[in-house]
Image (tube, rainbow, N blue to C red; front, side, top):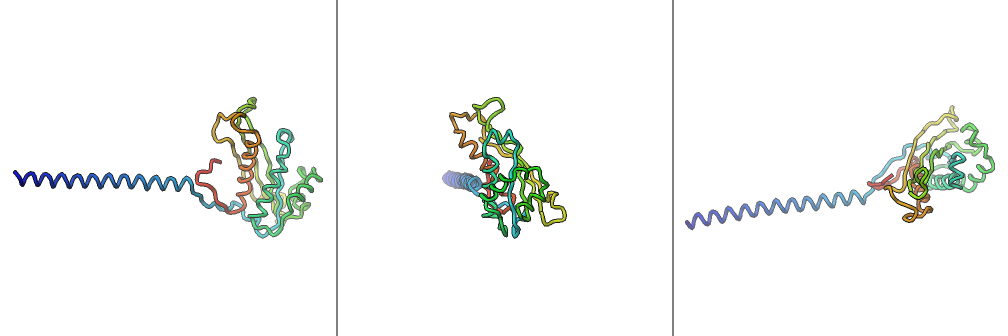
Length: 223
């Protein structure tokens, strides 16, 4: 009887140890999984440029929008032009670029540039690469409901190479679209208008500029 009790106790102890080790493994595995998920959510990854032809060449950025967009959002094209141009000067390694203030002055003084062939615009600006961003949509709220934020911006990015045999034909084209806020239901009392238009513009600027240089993006970037 004593021998049987000892054997049963040994079996119980072994089973307890096995169960404990399995539970510890589950706990450790869950902890590691949680840490990996947290690292992923807070981490970044490198994204390569989609067009690399600015490096070593002169360039300029021009932004166009229809009159309704500009009327509802005064200064939007100038703001996008300046900030995208500045970003690429800093990051895309051009051989030369027109300072943004000078670029805006030329465009203001030559409003007919919008209707000119792109090769002529590049020649007018004296650059080898012309980046054109046509802003086709820029709204801050739902149609017919100015109290609920539903910001949306979209457009088409095209690149022209004036030193090629076809300066009026695009060598690169990309449609982009961004939104803000990331969830619905936010009203004017929740977020001020200045914050909505600033973030929407920032997202457009990022998506246009990032096409032209290798950069880092958050693993969970919402746009």
